[in-house]
Image 1 (cartoon, rainbow, N blue to C red):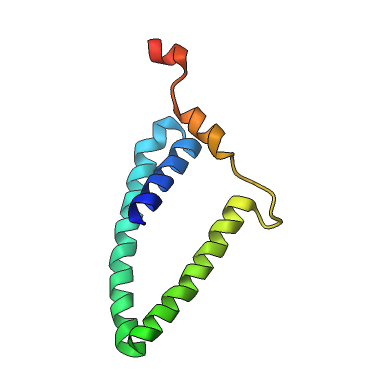
Image 2: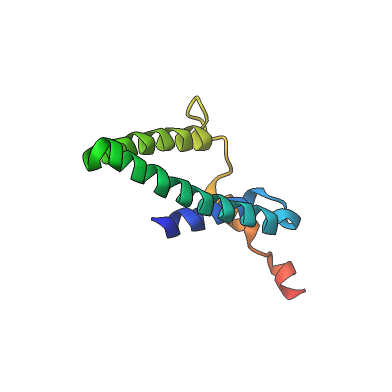
Length: 103
């Protein structure tokens, strides 16, 4: 699942961030993933100690549902109509055109 999230995140960055800032955006994205891993490990240990393993899984399920709702609103918009760029167009814009490939 990490590989899918990472590749998806980098693909979105490539489609949305100007080329001159691509390295900075990917660096911030990678740093935030590392920071989230550290925070999640510590918080997960504390939750497991306090709530037990079943409580930890319940808390993770709730957080997963909240995250899914946030992603759905970010992708579809609050009214359900697509705010973002269609995936085919985003991928096409990240590939060099045939004229650029010859240069």
